[in-house]
Amino acid sequence: MASADSEAVAAEREAIPRSVKILVAGGFGAGKTTLVGSVSEIEPLCTEETMTETGHGVDDTCGVEGKDTTTVALDFGRISVASDVVLYLFGTPGQERFWFMWDEWADGALGAVVLADTRRLDTCFHAVDFFERRGVPFVVAVNRFDGADDYREEEVREALDVPARVPVLTADARVRESCKKVLIDLVSYVIRLRDPSPHG
Amino acid sequence: MITIVVAEHGRAVRSLEPERGEILRLCHRPISVAEISARLDIPLTVVRVLLGDMLAEGDVRTRASGAVARLPEKQVLQAVLDGIRRL
Image 1: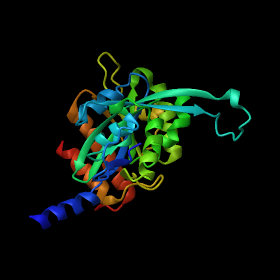
Image 2 (image 1 turned 30 degrees about the vertical axis):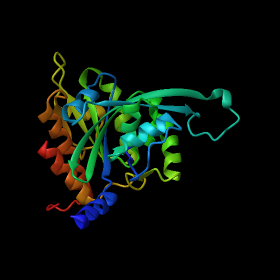
Image 3 (image 1 turned 90 degrees about the vertical axis):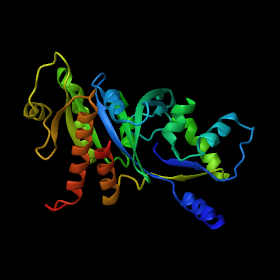
Image 4 (image 1 turned 120 degrees about the vertical axis):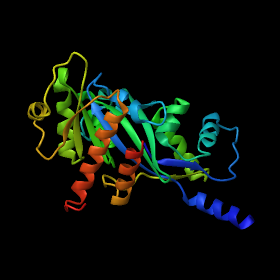
């Protein structure tokens, strides 16, 4: 028993799980937290990031009076996908004024879901543009809202000017199976990008 | 943000700084920096500073989420895909 215990301790010492993240971007009220909550194994948590905005990458320490402190709230959920891999889903605010934070949020992200609200498609432009430029693989999920016009996926693709390779699908952020499909499509897409062979 | 933190075995909770004690208690099992921030209601920036001190003093170990802007390797992606399918 003693040796089994010490083995267990040794194994535990090595076993810090690997963490990966997926960003869920979208405008205010697009359903980001709903989507996260639909698939998360924990109630979505909220963390706050306080940062000092130093003004668009200009390296000028003289302009102290121009600095501005901002607090951004991020909702997130967790899925233990394997014994040694934990997936985090972060709902990231889509407002343009937070864009100086996006580089950090996107750093190391496996991919992103742009959650589109067809009543306010313009709130997705920045997210689509950012992920394109930054090379973060993303899918566009059109959240079905009651009373919203039923857009076809192709119309959304055209309106957002999304390249043909990027998957565009409709989803219901309230429905777990629907959100699972969005994530499965995203990760499958990321795997295809990594290994474009037909057997991949 | 998703760096996983775990307390080193045998590190006693010292009463010097209550936040550090609470972090150490939470890190009894592996937990992400974001979760520590959310559960203790301490901004991420502050958690990072506290963890930096704790790491330097050997209270905790961490596992970063991977190299900057590098996609996870294929086995990890496959594990994520399988895990989501099992939900």
